[in-house]
Image (cartoon, rainbow, N blue to C red):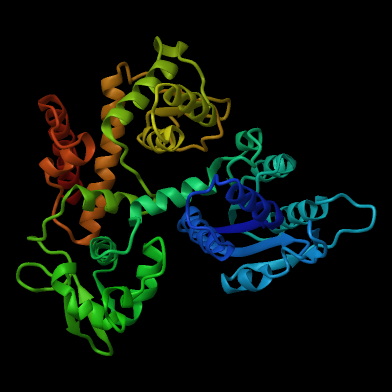
Length: 453
């Protein structure tokens, strides 16, 4: 089987100046520093690529360009970036501006030429991740998509063309990705945040060597982990001294000390008695592939209701819709109603709705009941879904099925209904909500038993 690949190309000057502008305007509240930005970009590229091999990582810029300072002299503002790029495993591509040429078109053209060349000459490239906000890349996006590649664009707020967002398969603001990661990982480095981060790591890896803990924690937290802030000389001392507070076990391994999540009988890793709460279920969904994010139920209910209002209708007369158009219209509608972070929540819920099989392909190429299709194609809501309740049931079924599968693969106990209800509906689910959830879980358990026999 031919391996699938992803390529990651950065319009570096565009990204650098856009981020700098937002920071200088006070529009960027997160930690700032370009090395920090590059580190985050690399993390996001790996996440966006998923199981694909990220085979090319390049950044294009005229690194010798300068701007004149108000006090006189020249500021070669990109000259220090190649070293930072190479530290992150990104190949710097120097682009020269020819006399009489445009201010920035040389970098744009070189990036576009490389992208089309790579996808033409290298087999297995399924995805192209572009970091830019420039509408000049719309022809490139169209060309790449016509050749069957998924085009993902990461832009900077206040510096990205709204038109460009409509011509890619997936669009994300860099600031939204940073904010989402910080919410998931925590916002400080107190023992509670570190404990939660360690638990997430151990849920995925079961056992970690001491030597791996510091670099992995640093990636999991919003800033590098520093054991001296807890009065410890090194990471090993921190783990041994605070193991009770952290809820971990410590033992001597074959070639290094190790940490693990202990069960009541003291064994390592997940066990039948290990209690999992809603935050653990959230992490199992969010940290797996593909990432699935649970949205607070009032917002989830409002978004699914809006989906049905737009896409529902009598029988075969249901309107054709586009995923990208739904994101825009639903985001605008939810923002007008006061929903915080409306666009991000709409994207997360729509992902669940489409992956739950609620929509069918609706163009001339569509086969009968084709549910697994590129979301750039037109779609229609399945005519079997004749109510908002059924739309929500199909969507929840997808989420619960993924959670149950991942828990089983990781060796955890089967899902517990009270905790699942709290995850999906909040602290006090209504009786009718729990009744619907019981039916979904029972059906999925029956399907698993039938498949096992």
